Structures are given as structure tokens and as C-alpha cells.
Length: 119
Image 1 (spheres, rainbow, N blue to C red):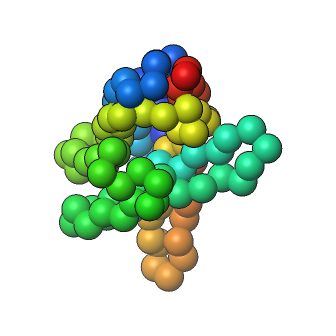
Image 2 (cartoon, rainbow, N blue to C red):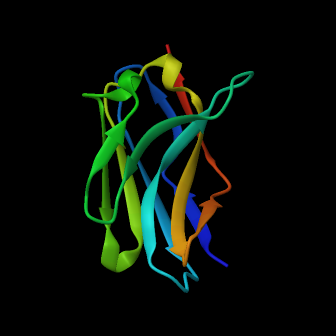
């Protein structure tokens, strides 16, 4: 069973920066896509950014130009550098990873880390 452990959340003022990290352990199969989702109070969980094993990235429009996702395949670790943070970025950020076993896609989630941006 894959375990995802996030770190790096916290409280920051508007315009500040934070860097989230997520380490995947226990993987028996190669991890394909890793990424970050977030959920604000009263809202549905939404995509923030993803990155494939080959380095292809995808971002939500709301974070383009401010957030950068990267990964270290050797360490099974994904990072999210968040700059120019806004109060609207306040949410619990969840790490995501998936693996393909034959034709089955297995999805894994972290426990979440709180990011709070004060105005």
C-alpha cells in the first residue's frame, strides 16, 4: 500500500510563498502521475497541478504563473512551489499519486496539509 506524506503547509500573508513536499513510500509498482489537489471549506476538491513521470505538467488556470510543480523520481517525491499566494488559495492541499497495474489505475491520497493565506 502506497503512503503519501505531505509537509510544508502553514500560515502566510498575502503575497508570500510556501513550498509543499510529498513523499511516496511503499510503492510496489512504478508511480505514474503525482500532483496536488486542494479543498476549501464548503467547496469540492479541485486540481491544482499534476506532473507525469516524464515531466509533463498541468495546472489549474487559477494558479498558472504563480505555482510550480516538480518531482524527483528517484525519491518518489513531488513538490509544489507556491508564490504570490492569495487568500483564495487557502485550503487543505492533498498529495495525489497513481500507478497502473495491468489495466487497473490505482489512486492514492495523502492526509492533507493546511495552507492558510491571511489578507
